[in-house]
Image: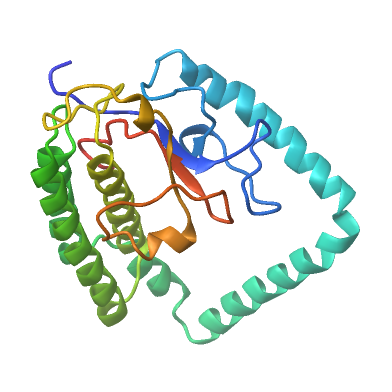
Length: 242
């Protein structure tokens, strides 16, 4: 290729063979999910497994779950539908439905600028060749950006692109944290400070909602799967985050 770019992550939300996450009733498949079929290196043909096989399993399992629990779930869906209709009615009464939708879809200047900063940091720190010092500096920069992003969202309103930006920064933070915590090179992850494979490091990195709080620590210990668990095998991240 003219420029290196990862179009698929070797990691994601931890799922079983049917796409079920550690949160009951929440399924994930495709690029979102960590199924384990990629290992530490993303193989091109494995996308067929992710997009077809695991997606099909997820649909069948979630559909069966819905069928089995339809009586219990129907009141929840009806309530959600009523709440959504009520929001539309109130927005229409205020005369702001179209305007509010247009404002939500706007791409504000601050978000465009910060997105460029995220791309710059990730390209510099998490590309083909990595080093510990640059990864740690990137983590600090991304933590500052995340705080700035959330501050801007509170002050200016949280539109579509602002939410997407926060997600990009979050994924970037997870990636550089896990990469800097790994003291070896494996698969698509190459650190010049630790160029060799180490058998003791031959395991996925697991982050949960509990360990996310301590993301700025020097390293994250292995923890058992809990709700909202996600795994990464320290593969390359998108060099040009979407």
